[in-house]
Amino acid sequence: MGRFFMCKTYPQLLFRKCLTGELEFTILINMTKHKIITTINKEINKINDEIDMKILQGLAYRAEARRHKMLLNKLRSEARPSWQYRLSRMVTSFLL
Image: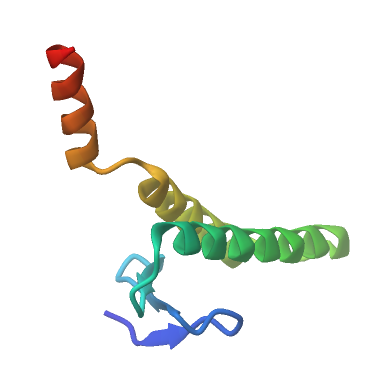
């Protein structure tokens, strides 16, 4: 496994390269779910701007696209309700 490196703009986020070359995302400190989602959204917006600039300049943007994909997956997993919440909603729907 690769070494961890900090995100320049958000020091509470850590990244590292996996064996496949993909970036792995780790949260360094305890954050609320809302703060995690907003932080990931800000990082995605910055990466989008970088990708747009590289497209306009005619440069390759493969690394940024991978990081964007990784952050979107993390965002989807964070935004999804927990299994306990879904289970409690299902049980209460049967009781009512």
